[in-house]
Image 1 (tube, one colour):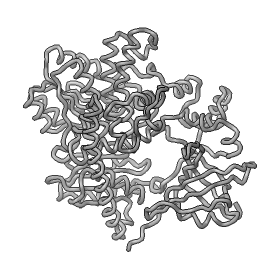
Image 2 (cartoon, one colour; image 1 turned 45 degrees about the vertical axis):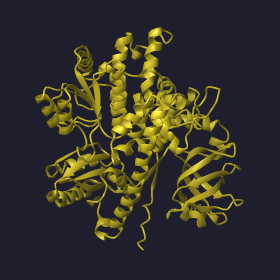
Image 3 (spheres, helix red, strand yellow; image 1 turned 120 degrees about the horizontal axis):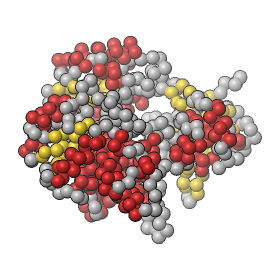
Image 4 (tube, helix red, strand yellow; image 1 turned 120 degrees about the vertical axis):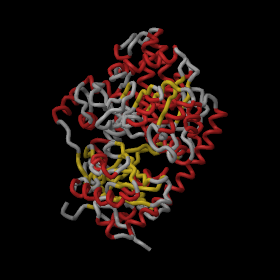
Length: 614
């Protein structure tokens, strides 16, 4: 039996911050720790702090600052006035399907001559397809609104133009050297777009279209800080609220930064999901044990408060599974349901897709790992590129991510799709895999994506050349630091000084919702010992055991014991049993609910034993 290599030892990196900014924030009344966390996020003034802790709809930018929005809205209104058939077209992942559901449902309420389309992952691939254009032409479509795709669809857009179909592209991916000749292109990342926020999701672009149309309808702009008690504002807020949950789900699932506008959308969207969820989201959450709590106090709708993390792990994968296994249109239909009976039927079907997806994911991941573990040449390379024509295309992206967790190298997993090898690429921190693939583009049929994830296709006869070239590019450009996994630590804390003597948890909650650029803080505490009244133990049924233990701080006169769980850290169990053995830990702080009681728990990300002289 092959023995797996241990994951590389992680580097602990203490984040840098502006000391003067911390002092200013402390002068404004913030604790030392809160001030540090704010400064690390670039928040240094009272106004920035207030906007961060109290997101408002008025913080949303004027949608007409986005280049071509002034062309998009009149074109949609023209289509409605002339009874032209419209098609809302979107990608097959969660971001794409939420974008389609959002804009289609909004337009459908005011206009019936409209349809939606999501391409087949296997027959059409990513983006605007020729088959999709043909579908539009055959059904008399005169305007396509493409969401979460299209920024590199030069040929399909040209084909649509030849057929007399206008195309509006609403995308958030990086454009190529030449923009498609579309009627209009909404993409904050296009070089000539001065929109103040560049990191919207694809669904976020759809939301901005809706915001623009509603602001025109009610004659007010959110960014002008309208009178919140006015009838127009209340109507605008009520209408916008119907779509904030989909925006939040897309932000969570597409792993975009949760700062700026995304923080506003995610904050309000989470409130909608927690208090007034749409039937489709409620129905799919049932399969994760999240159910409606019968209450009369107008508080939480479910039996727990949902976070961005819950959307990432409980909802997003299920919505994604439809496109991976069968038909992504099923996910759109689920999100469009206006009653629980229909929602439950679609949710049951989609949950079955997800169960199948998990089985495929596990099987392909294990096969891929064995290929690496049985090949010393592969182990010594700076990149991982694997191919197997039997691997399911719907899970190769997930598998690439899982291999990075274990081997920590830029990774591309390929499978066969008709006459091409199609791949999904994922990268390690700070290594631009999109740029690396671009340096091999002459060997590819097409590719697209961003710094940390990309999709690509290559002809079989060029595959080995690509593997060799890609390895050369990675080897020549990746640094030792990029090849070593690290843990960024927000602050060193003392149990006695920082946690036990302040309203620490309440301060921490103010930073939610957490996500990229505003991750759940990781803290470091030094000179811990295992409380000898509790025996540390290994838990879990997987080959990699987890560590369940209790810690006490040896410095600063702290006597309180904290329970801790360290996933994948079971090998430290015997070492920390030794009397007097000190160790340092880095960890998240969580609330643990058990037997009606709530207590702090440390989710330990890594542990380092102290030497005798430390």
